[in-house]
Image 1 (cartoon, rainbow, N blue to C red):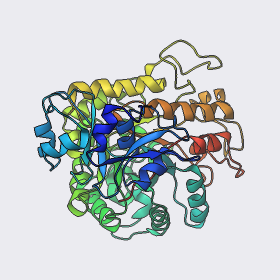
Image 2: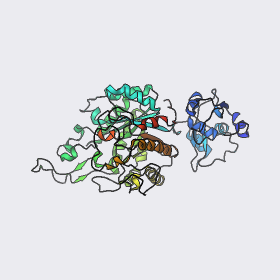
Image 3: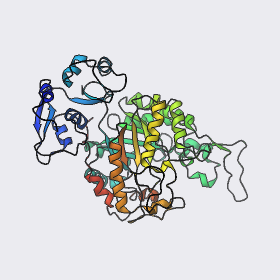
Image 4: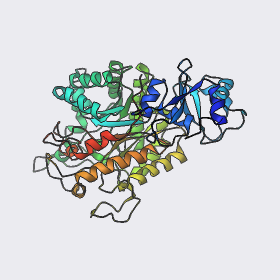
Length: 496
């Protein structure tokens, strides 16, 4: 902690700041809220690397309440104060004064400075500490109660387009309306993950599919139909829903069954159809969908964020069943995905490997599914960072829109299916520990903008696979991960 009598603190006090003595039971987020600023801004002002290392009688620099709110900005290579002032609609003089900078040419990449809060929307937001939810109307009060106990500042809601528009232009919003309204009342930011086109929008895709593929989802035949739906959805929740994640795992056949037949499919002796000759799977197809969604959302709610779909962790490409994660991501960026998004979604979940490890030594108690770098949390993040650093704008953030460790302990709805044996390797205490460790890792990386744990209530909505990851098991009992996640120090909800 900086000495309250230091020259730096004295200099800064002259430019609209004051001293605040930390009280017992204070948290950095409550202090930030009291002084109309952010946790990041207070960390920058006081050189606090970890917001949890705060003690009674510590002295902090805080903005004077009669001054404008402030936010933090990380200096990037090539930045100048003139360019920053221009970008955020402020002046060099204000930046010099607010930060106690004597030499306008002496700023360093990686340094954090303060900006007036009103200076544009491109300021990095509070870290999104979130939980994934499944909407269910009759359970909404209980969901909201549990979300409040978790203390998160964001919630991600799984949204099936097929459920919301079961027939063309006929909508069923009751479940989602109730949950969105309740979260909004709690001051929690909302991310909607929209996927799964309804059958009426893909009739010729599904009419003659093999029965093994019929349960799969995918895009509509006409992407403009999706644009129309997203316009309705974004207009309904304009100013309330903060972000939209467009689709789920488009590099995987399960979520992107868009069949191509070289000859008309024929029914076999068993009464079923054969498999398609090809699948229109790949980054170019996905970016076409992303563009339609981006333009539809921004046309009715320009302030809402658009996040690309988290990609399934897949280590092979056959252009039918799957496309390898890194290949899809690189192609997606080269196809222009960053022109139609405000952030890149990342997904982690098909693993029992502890999040602190690097590939690929066998972890204790993990008998399979440890051989690929895609089964390691840190490796996934570094893969994304590496590909983006070489192909994308410097300031495009990554959102971990799904991360979690499943367990077969506690009450579940099923036993793990073939291929999901790794769920047996993680006990409930490990599930809790890994959730906390993953959050700490993500929070410590400046290129990660948010982290969403998967999930709160998968068991309660009858999703057998999601139930293994759920913080509340099928008998309604809290798994240890619930309390662990609730106790993690988090940034406060920000308003707006």
